[in-house]
Length: 121
Image 1 (cartoon, rainbow, N blue to C red):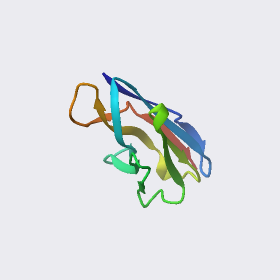
Image 2: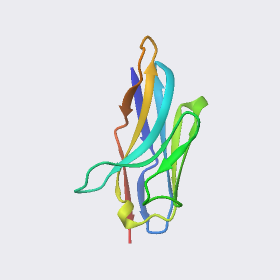
Image 3: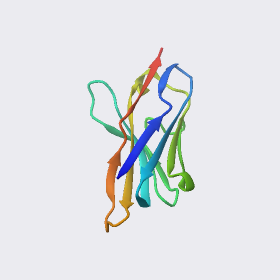
């Protein structure tokens, strides 16, 4: 069984920084893309940033230049460094990863439980 566990959320004032981490564990054979999504109150979940197994990245326009996604393949971990945070960044942030478990022939999309980020003005 595969599990994603996030950490690093919290409350911060506008202009501050937070770093989110997400570690994958279980019977993992291979991890393809990993990413972060968020869901703000009253809004649908949206992509924040995504990184491929080859470390190619893409970002939502709203976070470009402020957020940086990275990964440590040896630790099956993805990070999101968030700088210059704004109140509109307030949301529940979810980790996502495309993982092939042992004894399977396909990648499946797994989700973490979510971590709250609150930015006050």
